[in-house]
Image (cartoon, rainbow, N blue to C red; front, side, top):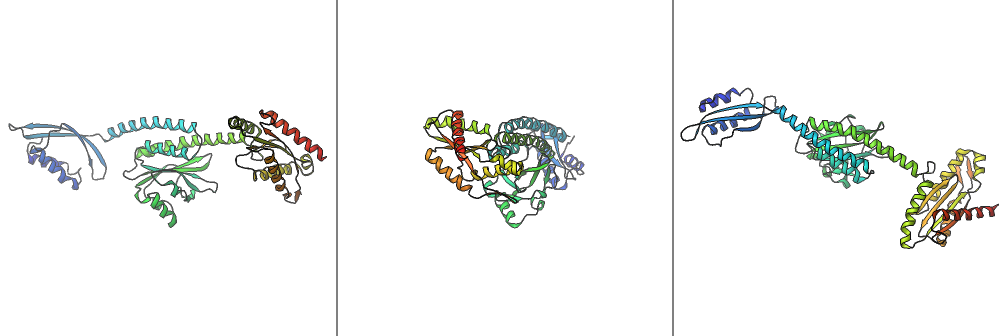
Length: 418
């Protein structure tokens, strides 16, 4: 028990081996004020102290006071317990609860939406909210040239940062890690560094957690989580590891589903729409055009003597001819037009808001496109095609009947050539 101011000083000196010199005077002054009765009584309180090894400890204090007849404090006794571990454990439970709940919501969002700029921004925004000390961040993806580029940012100017490209080689590890000096982390030229400093607030960033994303054995991209006012702790890095493993799985699942969707929607050889995708999309277009009373033209086409090409040059050359044919037509039709391979050497084009006159103009353009012979290594083949067409709703309002009419017209044109 501390009975006098002298006892208070003795008590403080007892802590000398624990309390750094720079805070001793402040502690002494506080004790003197308590002994003089200048502070309100506080039974319980917590404060943080720093030991000689610069480690922080949270102490929970319990104070007892004895007063004289004038109501002034004459005796006080303080007992303290180090509650650092207990407090961190409680914080960990709280953080884990919030993280689990919010990350589950994020998972549902990822599984319910397709990749887009907004998609990646939503992921980034949620991660910054659930990682305790994160205040800003970026989402970078690897492009077709194998370079990282910004796809989403939180707290930075995305439009300005989109011009920057990085080589993935600057990654120090495929596991999440903390960067304490962003400038030293990667060798950047002056132009890139100037843009990062101006629009990426590089000089303000105190620490960064780097989360590399590896999908299907390949570098997919990375997420950076930044802090300006705090230091990242073990809990932040722990969450970063959970984020990495779960996001990699979810992104792999999305990538796989996208490949399956593309395989179902696009012809594997030519890259244009498949028959199923064409029928589905044109039905939707027709249902919309009914309201506006607009026409749609259908051009049914095939390559003349395609069987002979396969027989004379082999199926590999036949496949190259089909790819060339699709590429040449794709180059001249509008973005709003639908182009599909129905099977074999048969193709269909849907031309919204085009009448009979418009069809003939398109056919003329296609003919000019094939004035130049197909060339593959030493092989040159002059390609010709036959066509027929139908007009919605003049010929029918039923898609099957429209295709049937165009097909019959194409066959008649082909027969006349023989």
